[in-house]
Each structure stands twice: as structure tokens, then as C-alpha cells.
Image (cartoon, rainbow over all chains, first blue to last red; front, side, top):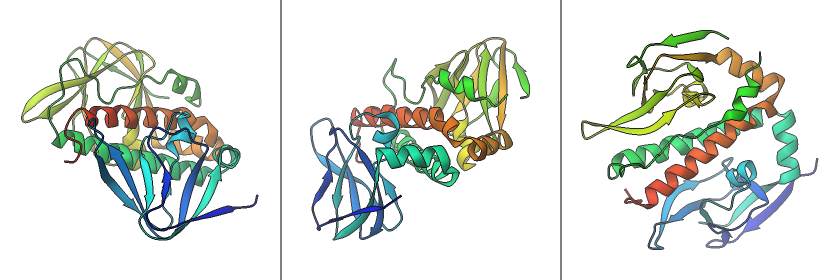
Amino acid sequence: MNHHFITFNKDEIIFLEGQPSHCAYIIESGKIGIYREDSSGNRFLVRKLSKNDLFGEMSLIDKYPRSATAIALKNTRCMIIERSRFDYLTKFNPQFMVRLIKSLTEKLRTTIAKLNKAQPLRKNRVAIKTTVSDFYDIKGE
Amino acid sequence: METLYFESREVVFETGNLSDCAYLVEEGKFEVSRLHNGRKQVIGILKEKDIFGEMGIIDGQPRSATVTALEKSKVSLITQECFHSMKTTNPEALMPLLQVLSARIRDSFKLLNTQNPSI
């Protein structure tokens, strides 16, 4: 399968939080910043990513809009992983799967750590509980 | 898969414990909690077919929350071997796990937005 590459100039927006999405990226060279917005619309930097880092994969997994904004911090070249390639890799490439899982777990741990530092939970608010009845079917019995 | 039984109030694991397996609730109910400024906060209730502790088998980091049985309960153990064999023989079967992680990240993002996100 052919790889597709794209180059972003410094300060160029790669995608915006809330946008629909069709692809993920792996950084070949350069640096990008991941930003989110608080409830009053102020943009803040969440993390910086560089060579070999993967980003934009969450929307391919759950098909929801972008959960964050990505901006090139310097001239950056990325490999594009389109939906079809993503589906192929998740089917046939265990290493890619492991990479995805690790990337998500890391994100989740960072977010939980931030939450733990922030204000206590409001009553009746559920933070990190989700049902996954599907998983029941893949127990490997 | 191995089955484990828990009595009401019995702790499955605590925040900071070493982790090497995940759990699938077969019967019963569990409470997920964490300590904030020394006070216990309940952050979720798990019931039949819910999975928990999956982050531990993935990255081997200590548990991020405490899970306690709320009633007589039964769980299946998902060991690391089981997880690893799934990812090699049928990686696509792990998609639901990715989806759950994604959902949890989005939930946590939302929650952070209502608090002070820049901390």
C-alpha cells in the first residue's frame, strides 16, 4: 500500500476541535502542538508531539469529531493514515493495534492525572466509567 | 477464563496497586472510587458486562482507581496472556477496547472542561 505524505508550514492548522475527520497522522519530521479549548473558548496547549508520534486516531476509532486542535509548531511532514488504511492496519497489524492502545492509554492516564489535580468531581458526575458490552463477545473462549 | 467471586464491600484493587489483569463483570455490582484530598469520591458504578482494570494489562501502570464490590459479585479474569493472544491472532477483536478507551478519554476531557483545564 502506498504511503501518502503531507507537509504543514509552521503555525498551520492541521485540524480543529469539533471538525469531522477522515484520517490520522504519523509525524515524519517536525513538531506539532495539540490544543484544546476550555468552556470559555480559550485555547491551551495539551501536549507537543514529534517524530514517530501518532495523532488524530481517536476520531477514526469512534467516528466522533476531533477532540482537539492540532497546529504545526514548525515545518512538519506527516504520513497520512486514511480510513481504509486504518481499517487494514487494525485488521492485520498487531503492532499497529498495540501502538493505538498504548497511545490511548497514555492519553487517558494524563487526563486522569490532570483531573485528579483539578477540582473535586461535582455530585452525580461520572468520570471514567463506560459500558462496553461488546467486549463480552471477544473474551476468546 | 478464571472466575472470581467477591463479597459485598470486598475490595478488588486499590489505587496504586500493581496490575496485571482486567476484569469482566459477570454478575453483581462494583463501585469505582478515588481519593481526593483524603475524601472518597465515587466516580462510577459497574454492572454486568462492564469491563474494568483494562489499562493495567495494557501499560502495566499502577491502578488509577479503587474498585469495591457493592454486593455478592462474580467476575471473569482477563489475563495478560489472554490479551496478548487476542492481539496477535485477531487484532481487530480489540477494537471494542479501543472504543472504550476513546469514550473514557472524551468523558474525561468533558469533565476537565468544566473544571480548570490548564492545571
